[in-house]
Length: 326
Ligand code: TRP
Ligand code: SF4
Image (cartoon, rainbow, N blue to C red; front, side, top):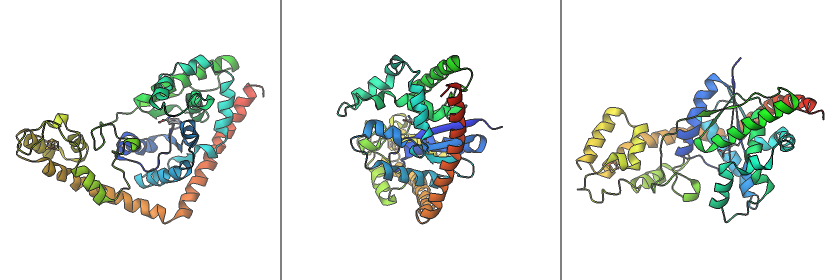
């Protein structure tokens, strides 16, 4: 029996290179070895976007298209949309009965995000319960492993505590999910900050290649290299982080030496990156077009995924309700 992996992503629309290298590439490997459930966490988006929910549906759709184009294979993994599986909400409610508020209040992201998003009123029940909904997402499927980034570790820790409490109260029911920390390559946005849609510094997989070229050519480099004649340091340059992923090692070494001696300029260096990036984007966009042109097929994939997920979810929920005597 394959171990089960469950992971979700909040719908933010088009995927950028940070998502691809940080999450999707890892999912592509996982789907070969594990029984994977990948879903769009649209209810999780509502926890912060409840006042402006109208883009969520479209973002969900765009993200699924990108997942498919990246090679997430509906024959190996189960793809679905969280809100289409109401069992997540039912389990969330049941878990809320046994979860002390203090456990939720002390999850670090709770205070941090409230401060970071202070323009929004996040003094809501739903936002406090974010990691508990996430707990329901994974234990509803008896997930063994949950691939997440560093920022989500505290959420998985909470999930494990909730599982232990549940099992203590009602008998061994859930397996404790384990976080699977994935190594995320450092890829910054065009302005040298973390790549994020809200910063407007992202390179999107589905972006027009000419626009990408323009963005890359104006991308921030080693800040000390102001003029063509200044030497640079690739270790301090966000562009070089991309070479580490996209460029063969011998060529990388050549570029690094050229940068340190000012033998090459940043435009030369960026053009080498673009030589691999642009064809990669074009190939992605071609695969994406095939799905875009076949909405019926995409719809079938989602419906089949939802059905498969609901089957597992409802069977587990039935057992959960039995042990809770409800
Ligand atoms: N909270 C996760 C994030 O922001 C998304 C998510 C929701 C998730 N439910 C999940 C991730 C379940 C893993 C498992 O990235
Ligand atoms: Fe960065 Fe390349 Fe310019 Fe060096 S030459 S600063 S590595 S873009």
